[in-house]
Image: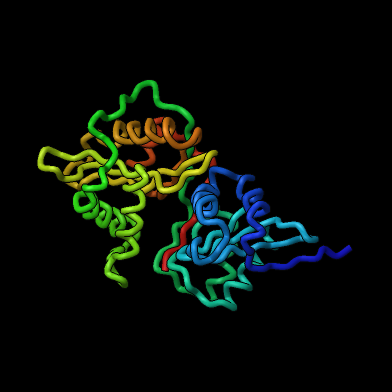
Length: 282
């Protein structure tokens, strides 16, 4: 018997079915799930379309198509369907990011039309913990960034983004969208930093996504002149304490495989590798 398959753009009425798919892998899907739980499936509120892959009338896989293209619980056949739709639509995203295996397959199918990429990060360990470390005391100077400290935190956020992604977030629209994102994180109490005696940021991190099941730390950054001084592990322990107390029972992050110091610091705090992401940057 032939299996009937199809892809289509999901509508607000498909929300429960989409959430059921996202709930299958709450850690890997935290970024997209957090957006869907707040915005639903309306493309304007969500910031992009949600594509669904159906087999015999059942929603099996998803793909978020916004600023990022993100395959979600995507089977090989679903990836092929999403690649066909993406080719027809043309590239509108600045990156493809998601679990390594389906993301690699998606990129292989899209590269002839969308390539070359500016950078491909094929293995980015996905790390998780559900507890505070026993032997690392949280940095007592790491605290929530206040709403009146946007001018203080923005330079550090811009420096982190530029260093990590390779382009400035101020390009294009002058940074309006990026500034709005930083303001959203600060306003929701998900931005954390340690400041020196002059009021300059020396450590920062954000909880970039949060659901009832899991949250994801992102944007970890230490000012260059303070690196190598043992700030990373206590700083992460402090952010982890906030994350477990205020947001979710599981805390995750993903990191470039070549960033040996960061991976070591995260392991010291208790994070364990449970999988891998992949990012394709344009």
